[in-house]
Image (cartoon, rainbow, N blue to C red; front, side, top):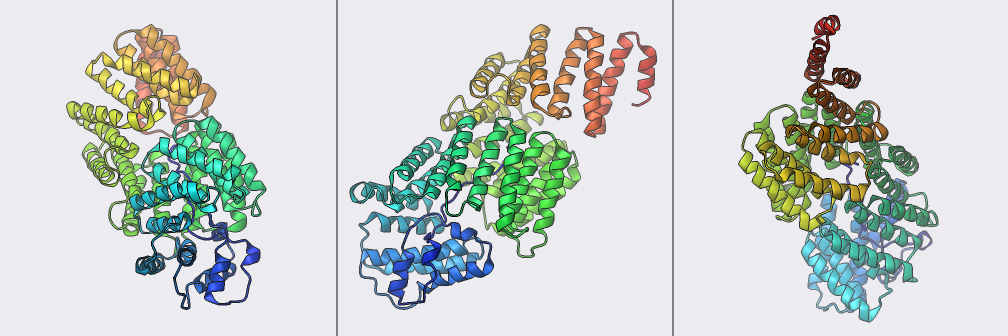
Length: 605
């Protein structure tokens, strides 16, 4: 989906326990920790909606931290750190101050111990503490060292699975997708071969691998992996869970990339029904699904329906005075995008600013969500024709992303692309061209030369070359089209910008027949894959009408202008767009001798 945030199954840093082992009388701390140390993996217990049960479980974990325990062996240190990680897993999204308290205690315990870690399981616990402390580079180093030791100690150990999954996540965050793919495949292989692995482990490994495939534009492969994850989860002791809902949301993303929007909608509705069984109505994980439904509707051009879903998400969130600021910001952010889709630009600006205020309060300093929001505010001001403000926000986004990720990251390339388009609008073509070329060169080695995101930027660069009269435009647009067709097939709606861009180039070169053929192909794709009132369909109709007007085939031009006008009116498009089409239609009617009809239509302008 266009702006869907991927729902990675982050491994909650805790100790997953079978329910039957959790109800026991409090004994000595040593005995309690022994009971806590069972199967160290993603904690579905975290997803319990019963507040009393959640508090009881958390009390058991906390009890493991009380009393005096002499740390004399690696195993004892590992158990104590695991208990801290379990508590951190439970309080992670609820109370950041409590997280910091327990994290500080855990790190102090580790530092005060004279034990030199030699066992791989202990190293995994230490690496996960580094993740909570936001020391990702150190965490990655320790995870990798632990994996080396697992090869000689116990390759089937459950914590080896955790190390592989966490490394997959870390590589993902650094946009190292080839390495992420490698780790995800290793994790899946471990889950399929280790006797300690559960069906939940297999489902999680399948899900994470599917997400990497999706990022690399392999939507069909991702779809099959998500379906396998869903089947695996059905045989889990907790089949009806938020994990299952997460698989369904991932599946919906794959369906959307394949333009199978109805299947995507069905998957999201299933996810919503599952989530409603286990969570209160104002829980952020439930409102996230509603937001994803909104995105799916927007992908289909059903902007009014999408807007209503975003409004509903905000209504649910507003019933909870303690709703997390970052989650509330996400809803305002999406509502702004939906308002922007409907050309309600003043309302969109208001919602964007609300989201920005909330995010800056939630995140102290630079954060990737803030950078994304700044980028989208920049796009709003482009729509408002306030290019100076647009430039300001895109520059802020680029600066923040460079600081967060360095030069080699897809988000950095996207900011470079967007800023370049604004600079071009401001007439600074030389700077725009240089920045857009830099964006393409940044992205190619990260995602590969045939990736869809690379092709999208090449199309933008090709269009810029077209405006400059640079002959490289044709080659770049043709190359992008070939790469997109190899990935998506010949009838995918994501081909539309490239087909139109290449056709525009031919029109400017007065190769009207070549342009007409490409516009017709674009129109056929739009008519067969998009809703009948989709804005992209109107755009194709307009361009064909212009071609026929230039060729003085006025009957065909009239037909396509009338079709475009119907869509614009149905969508309540901006008045200037409707007026522009009416004026062109009047010209065509006059040129074809229909002066009475032209005079009547002129009165509407």
